[in-house]
Length: 521
View (cartoon, rainbow, N blue to C red):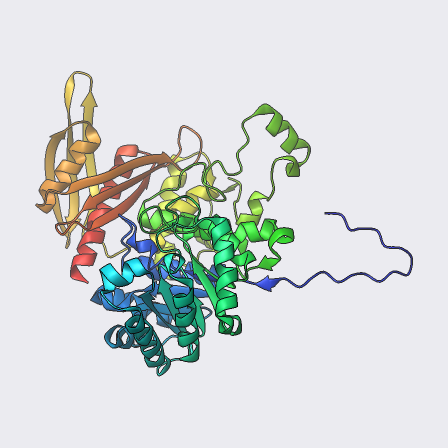
């Protein structure tokens, strides 16, 4: 916007100072509760480091008491992250709180996040407690958590369906007991933006002590209003928002972090608030989560969808070419979306490759870089043009590799209109080559069945997707496979190759290796 002209001698009116809204990212906790979103320890650490790089204020690393694996991941992330607060969720019980503290106590900035439901529905049917009992437990457990750390967050579960007077009483009680953040979530995604705005205005009047601490909101997306409700809460004075990358979460998901951040960035005039997020890391964060989980965002997803900055209508294309602002309210570069520039070829050396990897924001170990470079050289021999997206696809996969119980040595697949599809696959385990042949409904299905025969287990295929990384006939095939383990846990794998059968086989093996890694953890 252009600046209003001043009269001679007139002093410049200083721009109003925007308040900073904290980003509490719960991708690793509530996001993982999405069907098919199970992450192993290495994947969680890589995602946590990316969240730290992006500048989130708080990382909710998990629910420490829920399982030994969750406890270990919270504890490990606490030691790995230095520039963010690390939180663990806990029910309002001494056992949960003690376990949460054990998990986060080594963090540079630890937080205990306890919760207790306050709505009549939850108190009666889930907690089977009277309101006075809920109040007393909330206060007592907040006080218990405060013994461990000065940073305590209390969440009143299902707060938007709670009695306002009772909710205000609980808020006042937990603040007096030492809570430094009070979160009032829309747990089931029931409220609307107008209601949400009035809800926070009302609770701030009824519980004035909230204005001395951090007020937070946590909105679910059951009616597609998660982001809208979050923005309404910010307008009403909330100064922390709880959200997830790509909006993943239970049921229909949570408010999408990238949408909240960019709404505040683009509409500074409307909200008068900002975040500490480095917006140029948004696309990489989204892509990393997709790579880890195998769950892609829909093409028309705001901010990070494939079509978010695509213009097909002729009148739109003409307008953008003349001046981007005609149809783009933000630039692709502002969210870290880079063009497919040709950067390296088959004659490029390891040093140039390493520099390019670092410029793309990846920090690999020496061994990871060497492995990625070997894969790049193989790809460069097959492709005429190697793009940034090709390199990112290789590196993102390499960054979260688990130990390889099985590796692909070779395969042969046959298929045709007049012959049955067959595949012969040779895998290596503990230095020993294992070979089997199978028939199937196409060469990929045959290859998967051959792998099952080698391993001696019949895996249920939950999902299979195949995409092109870049344009062109020689584009890499990006295969994503999801299999179900014996206990029903879903494991996703990703494979890359200019041969789609090979990409699919590598994805299947990657999923199997993840399952073996989880079973031995």
